[in-house]
Image 1 (cartoon, rainbow, N blue to C red):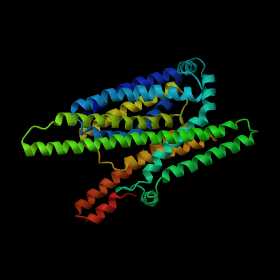
Image 2 (image 1 turned 45 degrees about the vertical axis):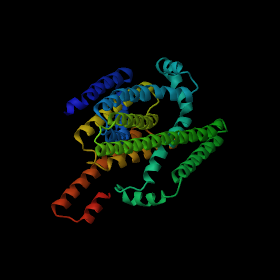
Image 3 (image 1 turned 180 degrees about the horizontal axis):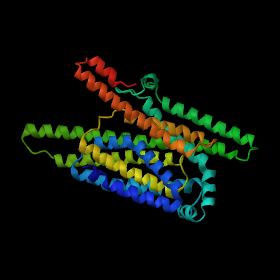
Image 4 (image 1 turned 135 degrees about the vertical axis):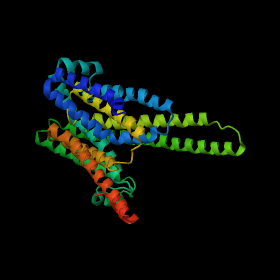
Length: 382
């Protein structure tokens, strides 16, 4: 079962790591491995969400998502999108950007380094919005209660996450402007570049979130219509047009899943820029990670164990928040790639360990005939 589900992922991992060694030696292998783990950790909650929706779809639409969807995710978002980001940021054509990355890596790195403040501001704001919207939302299960409870209360204020993100962006751009002034104004234009790029990241997040919300609403509408049609059919004794309605509902599910998958893929791509600027290593690492996310989605659907480790989603979002801060800090300061990669791994591991502890405590409470209140206290987090 495990080998059948993750077989392709294991094969892609072996090929990717070998390619990394041939491309850049053992250091490249280490970077690809870190990127793979980073992509898996960032996208774990995506796999959980995908599995929760995917299990409602019939076998045909599941196959469509896991074939067409994975092609879009791996080749579109992980291979093409990093090239597009570099090309736009460095004002190059896509072919020229690819050519430079292979034939003139020193010049390519110089261009990417010059464009890094804009990339960091854009990606940092996008990731920060995901984290803020998560921690400002009221939820039944809380991991770090001492943080999440007060933040959830503050989150009742409308548009608070946008306001906080804009304040952080202003501080980041002013900090960069101060640095430019101290260096004689040689990079004065980049202060405004940071501000504009950050605003673009915020707008991108709002657009993606709006589209996701639209498809989610459509999905709920179609499910309600399908239920109504089934009830009417039972009352009248006539066969319902369930195939058509189920098809429409599945189609909206598919669109919704693609928007979600693209947004989470975007997180991984942006986060990868905090680890390396090498397009080849980025594509290898993110591609390997994407295959594991796909396999994990299938595994969760087949096993039906989506609710076993309830804090993993929290850990993934805290990893996203940490990456957002790191990207914004790298506008002015350099941060070691190893530290950047390990932050997400540590947070995911911590949330997994907390989930295990919670499960053991719940099992013990049930075994001892614990009360409902004690069980609720256990399930609410650290």
